[in-house]
Image (cartoon, rainbow, N blue to C red; front, side, top):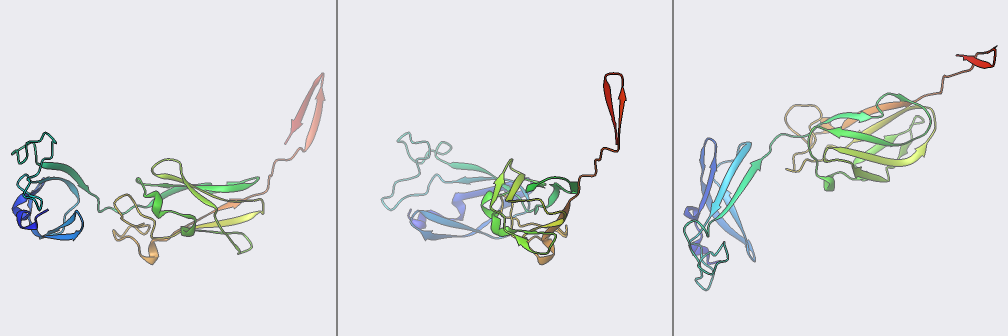
Amino acid sequence: VDLSTFGSGDVSIESKVGSVRVAVISHLSGTTYRLNLSDDLLAGPYSLEVGPEIRDVNRNRLNQDFDGVAGELRDDIYAAKLQIDLTPPVVRAQSPGDDLVGVVQFVDVFFNEAMDPQSFTPADVEIRQPDGHTLAPTVVMPLTESRYRIWFPARSELGRYSVRIGNEVADLAGNMLDQDGDGFGGATSDVYVADFNLAEVDLQLTSLDVVGNELRAGE
């Protein structure tokens, strides 16, 4: 577009508490432009409107509704709703989280909100075995927006396994993990650490009674 026709007066950003002023509009590359705001945005909903008097290099005005009539006061304004999320995520639970028996080959972790699956990969996870050696996860799979399954090679060794998830795992808004709950995500203290125990099966047959045509087992 012709940047001389694209100024702060062509942009409206409104929140529940008032207007947000655009300080500078800069051309990044091609058809991409950046709105630099005078103040940081607070968390919450915003409405954005742009146009309609912005022109391209051939002096054509905005035609947002594609009707061939450019620069219409309402129909050719670009409008969008924005939601600013500044609350960082936390892991609220994992499964297994206590004793289990048999073979284990995955752990499910439950976050308090929808997460960005691109930010959560096997490289963000460390599984430590009872003998102290680490076990490399193979896949991190989203089951829902906030529940992820961490797969690793099946293990049957008894003892406690620890699970560590890195602090750079992020929600959809880019807020990183805040496991210590101080409101600031991505710190060393925000690494998630928990464990589970692969235990022995303690069910035993201790007696057997024959009553008529029935067998009764005792534990």
